[in-house]
Length: 573
Image 1 (cartoon, rainbow, N blue to C red):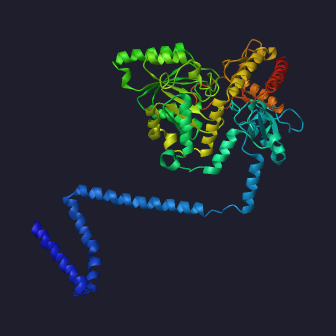
Image 2: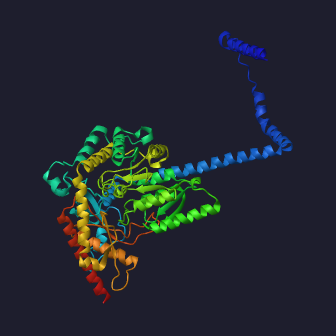
């Protein structure tokens, strides 16, 4: 057989040689009449072949007919889509004048407010209510204890207003223009006087921007990793005494991606119902089975764990048959309460669970050296909490987030963390800013001491304020820099949720008018969370605040609450 193949190949080669080299090949003449007769008789021949095929193999005919119909249908749909696309693309475009008019209108008005603007009973109808005033403000600049805001409805005549910043969560004042957070100047004063910004965090960011540019715009695992990212991961892992760290380009995606990377369909998550939006999104994306327990209630957590244990016994299921996690925040963003890590660590060890702790708000604010709630309770990551996520956007004043743990925890996310694999890496200058902020936290313990002193001072003043205590109650923990104030019973009854929302918006609006920015949580803390918390006023205390700043905030808040209380009492009468 091999010999025959060899002879066939040899014969083919000789023939090809004769055609190309010897040129003895003659082009055969074409019989045009025979070609015409073949074309004319093709339909008849095809019909006879089709009838014969239908008789001999009907299944083949059915399949071929379906394929033919499918091809014709696809051609028809494609032609319709192409005609619609062409019609859309050929529509009349905006003129240059129309484009400029739209841009001008957008610059002057900005986006619509979160709620319709309301006016007071004035005859001109132009005076805006204080409730809508806060909603229509945009932040122009934020520097430590000050921020610059502007009324978006003011158009081109809107003026900037410098106010005390109790709204953002820059707990350590790392964004302050002056490197000394206890004596920073206002944003407008510094910019107008032309003084040089000596904030080491911003200086590190500026230096990295000049060295690296804005970044690679590529994912970390492809071509987006730069030595600045690795430097931050190394610094944060050393600071938290863990084996490794992984950086995400966004603080929210760090929490969301971490939970979804470790918990999959069929796994079990036991979750505090008070977790914030990013952590809740991670729980949802994991598609794991979820059991909720009451916010910060360890007795209810034990009840949930015991009920799961009873179900395991009925189903003869081992706890090792599925991955199981308890998910909490160290300092809850939406309540200001601190998780009891000592009890959590004991429960997770007793029932053989792993613990995921989000330290986004507690890192840099709690613990002897600012390492968070784990340090506060003398617990250690990797041992008492297997997975810890940290936002760089609060105490460190940068952008992004990290997850710390052992090598297995970190390396697993480099292939399974969605925010790491599919999102563009963080610009190197934000990583350098975080490293500089971390250095300040370690080398300047007075910053953390100042924050704790301010927090203690604020809670003491709030509880000694008779007017505030008659109407509001402090619901956050005394060590929390996130201060939450909720409504008390007023004249024997509790306001409805809508009434509380409007009340807090009016109070926040009046405070803003008088130079203090704080947050009414009633409208925005409602989406992507399991249980909506009661409306509240939230004040974020910073190390950049002075005692004079805190006193002014208390005075302005007291006046606003007093004015609302008077108006409410008069209305009821």
